[in-house]
Length: 253
Image (tube, rainbow, N blue to C red; front, side, top):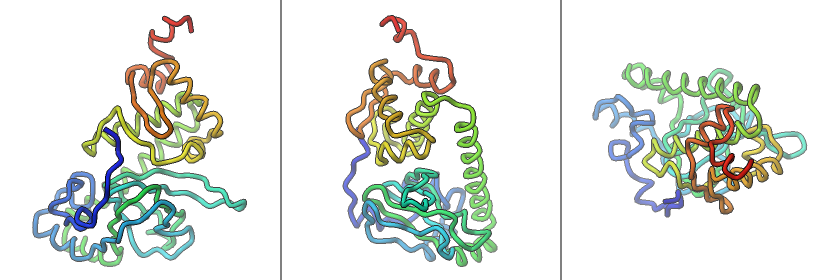
């Protein structure tokens, strides 16, 4: 099963109570009446398409955005027109929190594939958290999660080899898809090799070479942007810096 799905207006209009992302998103832990109050402030967009931008770096902060379907990347624009990719965001994830303190977004956000997004005006959300303590707690939890992910990423970039970085990245996507009810071993990459390289601090040629090597070693199968993970234990060992599983030794590697 891949992640390619047709997005319809009916699926976009599903309210928070019926949405299958409530265990990942802002409504987690809220009572039915509280979810109803949250729904009143949410703006649901028309379908967005690859290349559409949600916000730009240095733009005035006004809203948080929850990915409902599809995926989005956040990045820092570079002077030469390039992009330093900061993250890839999947359904149920909240973006835009970097703008709360300074009242300006610190990065840009661009849609990677046909997507639907819920916009949450922050002034109205902040007012609502005063009346619903559990919503405030969930917001704090999401902020803490984002800080933790940034810490993990810094550790990955600071101490891991190229092989370890890519293996950890693939496994991270696998786990995130699994939490959303998708296959953990068969999925589609919405981001380009160039984006992955930017995110992991590696050249695009290195990313392509490593995917080929991982396939040769029996860790995964790759066809353009479609991945099948065929040896999770081997990928986990690679991500931990423990080398490949015995499969490599069989071939005299």
